[in-house]
Image (cartoon, rainbow, N blue to C red; front, top):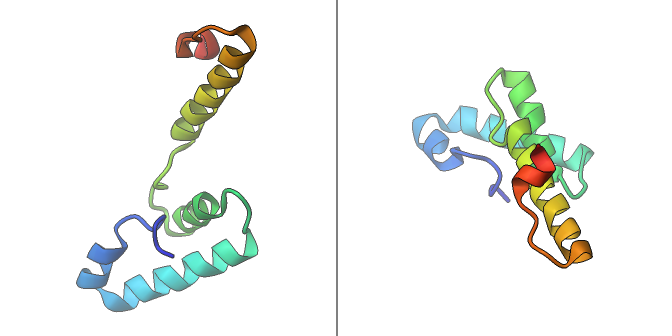
Length: 88
Protein backbone atom coordinates (compact mmCIF):
# COMPACT_ATOMS: atom_id res chain seq x y z
CA UNK A 1 0.00 0.00 0.00
CA UNK A 2 2.79 2.47 0.79
CA UNK A 3 5.43 1.32 -1.69
CA UNK A 4 5.31 4.63 -3.56
CA UNK A 5 5.29 6.81 -0.45
CA UNK A 6 8.97 7.60 -0.16
CA UNK A 7 10.04 8.14 3.45
CA UNK A 8 6.74 7.04 5.00
CA UNK A 9 8.35 4.98 7.79
CA UNK A 10 10.75 7.77 8.73
CA UNK A 11 7.88 10.25 8.71
CA UNK A 12 5.85 7.97 11.00
CA UNK A 13 8.72 7.99 13.47
CA UNK A 14 9.12 11.77 13.25
CA UNK A 15 5.47 12.85 13.29
CA UNK A 16 2.72 10.25 13.20
CA UNK A 17 -0.07 12.81 12.72
CA UNK A 18 1.62 14.30 9.64
CA UNK A 19 2.38 10.83 8.28
CA UNK A 20 -1.22 9.69 8.65
CA UNK A 21 -2.47 12.87 7.01
CA UNK A 22 -0.03 12.38 4.13
CA UNK A 23 -1.12 8.74 3.82
CA UNK A 24 -4.78 9.76 3.68
CA UNK A 25 -4.11 12.41 1.02
CA UNK A 26 -2.04 9.89 -0.94
CA UNK A 27 -4.78 7.27 -0.80
CA UNK A 28 -7.42 9.83 -1.79
CA UNK A 29 -5.34 10.98 -4.78
CA UNK A 30 -4.65 7.39 -5.74
CA UNK A 31 -8.32 6.42 -5.54
CA UNK A 32 -9.42 9.34 -7.69
CA UNK A 33 -6.70 8.87 -10.32
CA UNK A 34 -6.21 5.10 -10.27
CA UNK A 35 -4.70 3.74 -13.45
CA UNK A 36 -1.39 2.18 -14.46
CA UNK A 37 0.41 5.22 -13.07
CA UNK A 38 -1.62 5.55 -9.88
CA UNK A 39 1.30 5.59 -7.47
CA UNK A 40 3.26 8.06 -9.55
CA UNK A 41 0.24 10.33 -9.97
CA UNK A 42 -0.48 10.19 -6.23
CA UNK A 43 3.08 11.25 -5.49
CA UNK A 44 2.88 14.06 -8.04
CA UNK A 45 -0.38 15.39 -6.63
CA UNK A 46 1.02 15.39 -3.09
CA UNK A 47 4.22 17.07 -4.30
CA UNK A 48 2.21 19.79 -6.02
CA UNK A 49 0.09 20.28 -2.93
CA UNK A 50 2.98 20.32 -0.47
CA UNK A 51 5.62 22.03 -2.60
CA UNK A 52 8.00 19.08 -2.09
CA UNK A 53 9.79 17.61 -5.11
CA UNK A 54 8.11 14.45 -6.45
CA UNK A 55 9.79 11.12 -5.75
CA UNK A 56 9.98 10.44 -9.49
CA UNK A 57 10.87 13.40 -11.69
CA UNK A 58 9.75 14.10 -15.24
CA UNK A 59 13.37 13.49 -16.27
CA UNK A 60 13.16 9.99 -14.72
CA UNK A 61 9.97 9.32 -16.68
CA UNK A 62 11.59 10.49 -19.92
CA UNK A 63 14.48 8.07 -19.34
CA UNK A 64 12.00 5.25 -18.78
CA UNK A 65 10.15 6.08 -21.99
CA UNK A 66 13.45 6.24 -23.91
CA UNK A 67 14.30 2.75 -22.63
CA UNK A 68 10.89 1.45 -23.72
CA UNK A 69 11.29 3.06 -27.15
CA UNK A 70 14.78 1.58 -27.51
CA UNK A 71 13.44 -1.87 -26.61
CA UNK A 72 10.70 -1.64 -29.25
CA UNK A 73 13.13 -0.37 -31.89
CA UNK A 74 15.64 -3.06 -30.97
CA UNK A 75 13.01 -5.78 -31.47
CA UNK A 76 11.90 -4.27 -34.77
CA UNK A 77 15.43 -3.72 -36.12
CA UNK A 78 16.82 -6.96 -34.64
CA UNK A 79 19.84 -5.14 -33.23
CA UNK A 80 20.86 -3.31 -30.09
CA UNK A 81 19.65 0.29 -29.98
CA UNK A 82 21.65 2.73 -27.90
CA UNK A 83 19.79 5.24 -25.75
CA UNK A 84 21.70 7.99 -27.53
CA UNK A 85 19.87 6.97 -30.72
CA UNK A 86 16.62 7.73 -28.95
CA UNK A 87 17.57 10.75 -26.89
CA UNK A 88 19.82 12.39 -29.47
